[in-house]
Length: 527
Image (spheres, one colour):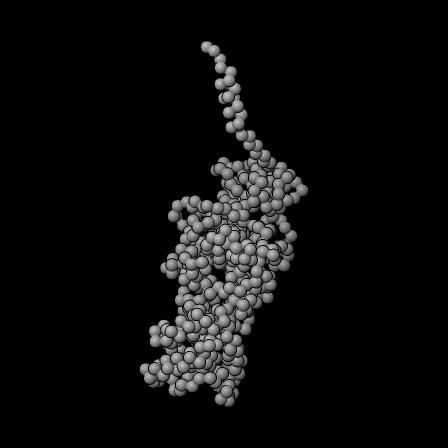
């Protein structure tokens, strides 16, 4: 048989061209101590801070992260089955940072902080991944907050407005309605879904009972909000390392959508609720003490401020050159006995752009949402409001402030003059007007009409228990008989041109209301 050298040469050349050399270099160490979700590893001399580690155990690979770089050992936290890791197990460096899956496939799902589904609806095929911990966008990449993020809550949208890209703290004692406010804000985004203004919502539950999270998911499903919401659950039974990374995981999933604006894709706006950061700080304190870091005030480590600042600084409104996407953060902090001057509350207050303080006394007295207007503030202010709301919000704050002062004075049994009595009556009705049922967001135009009616004195002589009946009828009147005037308000977004017509229309409605309810009102005067 004759050997054909040219054929052999061609085959060899083809094999050489197709040969690929892949060299994977990893450093291998061993676990010298393990317990409480923390492992000490010897032999990883070139390990980087925050690097992802792979533990080879009898039950398969378990992931971890390098947290402490010491002279002879590496302190690592374990993400996964920490009971599977034993002394003597080999540990490999990966050269990677921790990542989580991201993309549209996560919408409507409940996942753990590593992106694994926990809702029993099968695996998630994510089309992208995001680094868990990144450097926040710089000054040049941002623009001021100017677009309102409507929560549908009258007391907030009128006096403590939230803008897209803002960080607004929700703070209060246990059982004062903090989660309810955040859920209302998520549900209020339903009307924008499917438009260019669509907002993807991420709800991060840290240290909550699984039954509580299940109730939250059920509420969102019943209100049609799960279509655009991702729920990240690190429950009370979840190990501390996973509770620590949960807010970062939720933030990374939200950032995927914020960055879509760079490619002219939608949705490019995101809202992230962290419920709550007090429990994340507690989990981080546990990790730090187990890693033998020196404790500081209230046994928290010295970098607990950095824990929250590097998270909340990632909330931003990107510049138009970067796509104009936004990430709005609503962190929640639980106080003890109303102590807003404690360590973690003061830290987060100093990082955020304002706070919504929910007062237990107001909640107990039936004022819900129990917003204390005196302590609550939005540092973005009127920049995050439409013109119509800006025009009436100032008088609303003044009316409420005057009411609170006079209310305390009137309790002494002092006789009041007519002007003071009028302020007291108006304030009481404005407080009643701002009360709102749960999971019933108001359209911003309806809010403006309601508050305008209160500010112009149309409610001054209406019995308090009939205020909501008056409001309901008024809004129906502007959606029917006076719908042209309402449409003009939607177009103008201001009362300047149509203020007199609005007053006249409200006068006509009130005349009909008084005729139908003769005991509810005695006069028909306005400012």
